[in-house]
Amino acid sequence: MGGKVIAKDSLGEFVSKLSERYRIFGPRKKGTEWIFDEVRSAEEMDLRYSTTILPPRKFFIPTSERIFSFKMDGGVEEPEERDGPSLIFGIHSCDLNALLLLDMVFLEGEFPSPSYARRRERTALVALTCIDPSENCFCESMGTGPSPAGGYDVLLTDLGREYLAESGSRRGEEMLALAKGRAVTAADLEGKAKAIECAKSKFKKKVDLKGIDELFLRNLDNPVWKRLGEKDLACGICVNSCPTCFCFDVRDQLDFPMVGGVRYKEWDACVLLEFSQVALGGNFRRDRAARIRQFIGHNLGWGGASQFREFKGRAKCVGCGRCIRYCPAGIDLTEVVKELRGI
Amino acid sequence: MRLENPYLAEECAVKRVKRQTPDVYTYTISYPRGSNRLRMPFRPGQFIMVSIPGIGEAPFSFSAWDDGKGIFDTTIRTVGNVTSALMKRGEGQRVWVRGPYGRGWPMEEAKGKDVLIVAGGIGMAPLRPVIELVAKNRRSYGGLEILYGARTPNDLLFADEFESWKGIPDADLLLTVDSVPKGIEWDHGVGVVTTLFDRMRTEPNDSIVMTCGPEIMMKFVVKGLLAMGFQPKDLYLSLERRMKCGIAQCGHCQIGPKFVCRDGPVFPYSELRGLPDLLV
Ligand SMILES: Cc1cc2nc3c(=O)[nH]c(=O)nc-3n(C[C@H](O)[C@H](O)[C@H](O)COP(=O)(O)OP(=O)(O)OC[C@H]3O[C@@H](n4cnc5c(N)ncnc54)[C@H](O)[C@@H]3O)c2cc1C
Ligand code: SF4
Ligand code: SF4
Ligand code: FES
Image 1 (spheres, protein in one colour):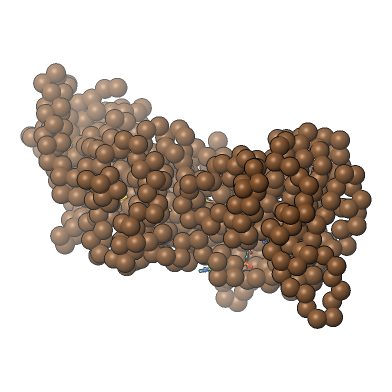
Image 2 (cartoon, rainbow over the protein chains, first blue to last red):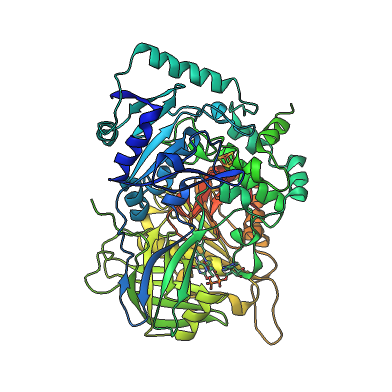
């Protein structure tokens, strides 16, 4: 696939051209943090962001979403999707790889989700090589960063005064045709490799993935779970901030005056008590210890390749560090792995 | 390509409601004429998602199935929102049904082998089609032995079919209850279902065990049978978990890497051993 080198001065023009075709969502500063939000120009974005509060999963799986509406006297109506093409600008490697895991759940199974498929299809992805990982990041050890191997339409890498822009799809080629820039030279590719090396030297956390499924399954009774259960607040922040958590609840709501209603899905979290409750008060994860073990075990142990065969060699966790950054109880899953390994 | 919304269900009619016990009813449901589900293959042990718009959706097993006619039974204990609404609305109501989903009982693996069924309470519901299938294809299977336990004699499901089960060639039915209320005649066992192991004739060799009931019951069933020499790969359990989708997306039913809805609800014990959040 082709590429171009775009001067930073020309990025604004490129974004403005793209905005004629796409609604653009990019990283925007909010207080001391960043969020993915609709933007109209390059100036509104901060491409030196570290991580956003919520991952871009919200664009593909909204917090709450109508499955269909119904009338009590018969008739079901599926939600109409009117949204046109959109574009996520500056998605980091971890969050991009997270979408590939969500694809396993919502596209690759026996019953693909039409709404997810539509949103994936209509959303272009301009990825960004991460050059400044935060103190909580560990994508390198998860094999998901700092620069993505694929899954993007365009990949940008900051070369100092210019961006190296590589296309990864036909849509990406078409997008790059809108950009002013010069041809890519061997020196630019070397520059990219250097930027990646430099980013790698900054990681402070890592997870050793060797035999990690068995590590978790062998340690179901490890005292670490009880201790974490006592610390854990079961607030669900980890799950809500996780780019690969896919769990949801399904509920019905009746309209007033009860002539119809909606069946909708809503984000849910395994760390919450009701999540595993069954009839007559049964609950297979009543203790917080079991619930935090599910969150960490699913992310690093038995999720990913053990659950979705095609997801070769990958864990569910992409190492974005959000659950560490936002956990009010200071729970750090990379430390838990060390403890399980007896390090 | 346009994908079909997998949550869309088919509107079906509840033809008949039959009381089994004070809180368990069998609902005979038929798919509408022309439904493309009429020809769908059905395997005992699979489940469907049944819903009432405005109230909610829940998973239930088939307790009988009429091949090709699109009529099936599901036997349901009244415990909450959906199940209470089903009971109150009775015959003639319309319900939404989607499925069947999941992996059922190992009817192929069991061919040529003895079949031992161990059921507790409502757990008999998904095993009833197994008994019917074995009866119908009697020569494909070896001996059939059914161990069934319930809280009291009044809580036994399908009691009016016990005689015909006993009439199946080379079949036995052993019953037990936890307790017998005053005034009820009872000439079978008293005690948990595992107390029937002393009297059963099925041997560990060349046999398949299928069990369903409260997980704590299955724990003792598995323990007892392993001690008698049965192999983990020959013990099949049907598990209950909270299920919101039935199609491996909502995440509620996960046990380690398994989705109970996708990989189960029936599992050989050999696949479950060592997984988290299990009582067995
Ligand atoms: C594969 C499978 C097969 C099954 N087959 C059968 C069968 O053949 N027969 C049978 O009787 N049962 C069967 N069950 C069990 C059956 O699905 C449950 O009893 C049923 O879901 C209860 O539904 P309900 O709406 O009546 O109860 P609910 O109203 O859902 O109540 C059930 C429990 O869920 C909890 N709950 C529900 N909603 C919420 C919420 N929003 N927040 C917090 N907690 C909540 C509550 O603790 C409540 O006690 C099966 C289950 C599975 C998984
Ligand atoms: S588990 Fe934590 S670090 Fe891993 S992807 Fe989820 S939020 Fe990021
Ligand atoms: S970690 Fe918990 S909330 Fe996240 S996908 Fe796994 S089970 Fe669902
Ligand atoms: S019921 Fe939703 S994942 Fe199994």
